[in-house]
Length: 263
Image 1 (cartoon, rainbow, N blue to C red):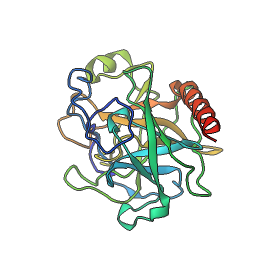
Image 2 (image 1 turned 180 degrees about the vertical axis):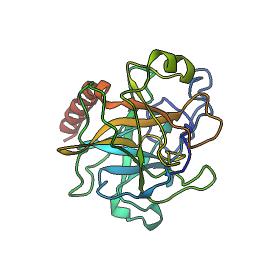
Image 3 (image 1 turned 30 degrees about the vertical axis):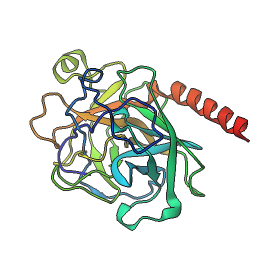
Image 4 (image 1 turned 60 degrees about the horizontal axis):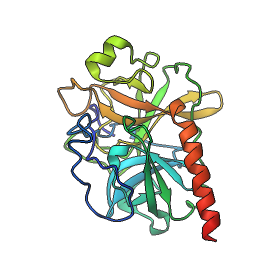
C-alpha cells in the first residue's frame, strides 16, 4: 500500500481467459481513463488470507478478495486478469497457491468498477471466504484498506499490507458527488489517515470495517478523486458491497451450475 491516494489501472471489459493485453477502452470508459488507483503504505497485513494478488503473466497489478468458493471480487479496471495468488508476498511465491482465472464477469451496471474472477479450481485448503456487508446503514470509522499496492506512486510493493482510513458515513453527498464524481447510490468516499492512503496495486482490494463479529468487507478499492493533484494520498472512491451482494449470489449460482455440468 502507499502513502498517497489511488489511481485506477488500465481498463478492459471483455471476459478474461488469456494473457492478451487490454483493448483500448477510451470511448467506453472515459470516466476511468488515466486514473490508476494505487496501493497503501501501511503495516504488513495480518489475518488477510482471503485477500489475493491479481495479475496477468505473473505481473501482479491489482488486489482481490475471495467471496465465494471459486470467486474473487476485484475492480473492473483490473481486467484482463489471468491469475490470482493466495499469499502475502509475491516475491516469495508458492506455486501451489496460484490459481488460473477461467473467465471474468463485469457487473451488469457498467458504471460500477467491479468484476468477479471465476477460478479454474478451488483455493488452497483453509482459505476463508470474506464476509460482505449487506446493510446500507452508514459504517463506523474503524476502517482498514488491504492490498498489494505500492508504498508510493514510484515504489511498488510485493507484500500484502493494510492501512487505517477514515470516512464520515458513506460520504458521497450531492455536493461531493458533483465535485468528486462519485455515485451516492453505490460508492463510499474514504480519506487518508495520518498521511497514509491506498495507491497503485490496491485497486480491487477490500475496504474492511471492524465489527463485533470480526472484519467485514464494506467496499472495493476503485479510484482517486477526480480533482486529486497527486497520484496517492488524497483519498478516493470505493464501490460499496451492499449493492453487490445480490449480483455476487447470482454469479456464484451460475458458477456452481457450470461446475456441475462439467462433471
